Amino acid sequence: MELICPAGNLPSLKAAVDSGADAVYIGFQDDTNARHFAGLNFNDKRAAEAVAYAHQHGTRVFVAINTYPQVSAFERWQQSVDKAAQLGVDALILADIGLLDYAAERWPELRLHLSVQASATNPASLRFYHENFGIQRAVLPRVLSVKQVEQVISESPVEIEVFGFGSLCVMVEGRCLLSSYATGQSPNTYGACSPGSAVRWKETPRGLESRLNGVLIDRYGEGENAGYPTLCKGRFQVQEKTGYAIEEPTSLNTLALIPDLMRIGVSALKVEGRQRSPAYVKLITRVLRAAIDAAKKDPDNFSVDAEWMTSLEQVSEGTQTTLGAYARPWQ
Amino acid sequence: MKKSAPKLALGPILYYWSKQQVEDFYRDIADTAVDIVYLGEAICSKRRLLRGKDWIGIGEQLQARGKTVILSTLTLLEAASELSALKRLCVESPFLVEANDIAAVQILKELGKPFVTGPSVNIYNSRSLKKLSEMGLHRWTLPVELSANELARFQQDRPENMETEVFAWGRLPLAYSARCFTARAENLQKDDCQFRCLDHPDGLLLSTREDEAFLCINGIQTQSARTVNLLGETGRFIELGVDVLRISPQSRHTVDIIERFSQVLNEPQSPERFNTELESFMPTTECNGYWKGEAGMDQC
Image (cartoon, rainbow over all chains, first blue to last red; front, side):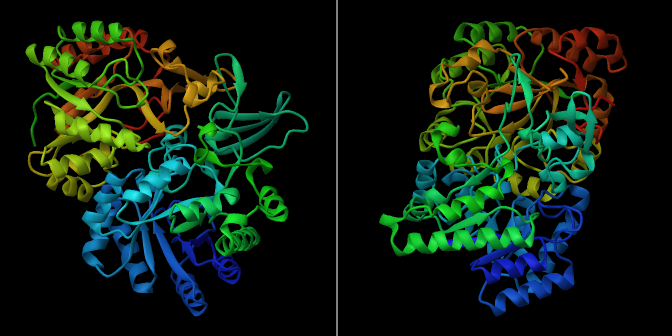
């Protein structure tokens, strides 16, 4: 099982490569990728340096061009595909049917991975992308239990990559419009969820308030830790009860599941977080590398090292982690 | 480009209603001016008060009354059993099938059956539409987050014989999850949900901590609290060559809503006279931001 790590800039890429990632995934500096944040991602020069550095160290580079191009912007997404192909990257991570069609036609030799943003959760969907565009791997949305992932793998025509650590999307990726409903900008159309430009913080007599385009996402009392107002992790009212109606601020952490994921045939474990710092990337890569190596060596006696767990929890949202949909009770 | 008025479609019931309520609902629908009726369960495979044969029975009755019937399919497929059920439905359906996931597209293509797609199939550009057209797609629904201007670009080179549908009335389908938020609100686990969706025939309102109606929980689906209402855009629909307008069912007033749409389509000059009445048919307030190229919740 490979370890796939995120890089939002060259120092992060080097941190991932140096700490034992099998592959690193990056994006270009615009809305063609799903981490379209100011100051993040790679211009042409940096992307070339990134590929050179990774390849020198035997690490592969994947480029995510995984948002959905609209009619008027399609050409720009095509150009991103061309640019990535010409950089000599090892795979493209795509979601849009039209763009997959273009990439398969224009660069038939280039390896294609299906992005999690394509929302493919089952063997029939995977067959669609494999037969039509020759994808060789798919990243599964964070909605399946371990048993369901196993069933998908048993009938999948392609390699399966799953999320192992990082911010947790509660909704099926590629089909969540909550952010565009509130702000006009969503992962699909803009490459960002709950974008920073829409966030406002305000101290009020009732507490510190976080808003997204005017919508109150949360209000913090004294002593409460305020988190980034990701829409699905705010506190809301349902039937007169106030709480985390959708999900708490938490990160996905599959450390305990690593031997199971290997046993069922997962090809790659993906770490979320191109928006995070080089120090974060270094820490996560180191811990997951150690965990995967330990599980490979002796899967039956694998146990989660206390230091790994503490390290990961410290950098998690709300300093807590979850197994997410991999475990039925979460659902 | 065609310039005739769009037809009216009634989307699948997105909530969980009793069998009696569903049967009564479609008995009323049979008398309305709606041209196309989507039937079946698109949200949760645990909702089984009506089985395949029940839906087909309702479909046959509606067909006998001149309606075009389409069977809808599940949007989020997780278990292998859900995929098997989808396959069976695609094989056995006597009606056209609406794909709400690429799995259904693939299965219908393999069967050589033509199909339509609902709003959760991501078609964001003409090349995607063309590719699916080659596989048997003959009507697609514009993703709800795309605007009228974007649709205009699609329409400029839409594939031959491709029809376009727009979600014109109802709470917007916004997201799907492995988690059931209705069960969560009731402090239950999904595997023991006790079918609480039955208690919420129009979903469960989610408000901000300052009581602003924001979202609507419907099992594993999240909808907008606000109702999209594009009745005032009839002129634009005709200009853009939109073929079908989708009205999403709600537990009350659906027949009245269809009636008003039908009246306006026949007399496109006067949608405003129904504004106040239509507002009274909405669970909260209205929005049209997506259609206007703004945040979905806005009313422009």
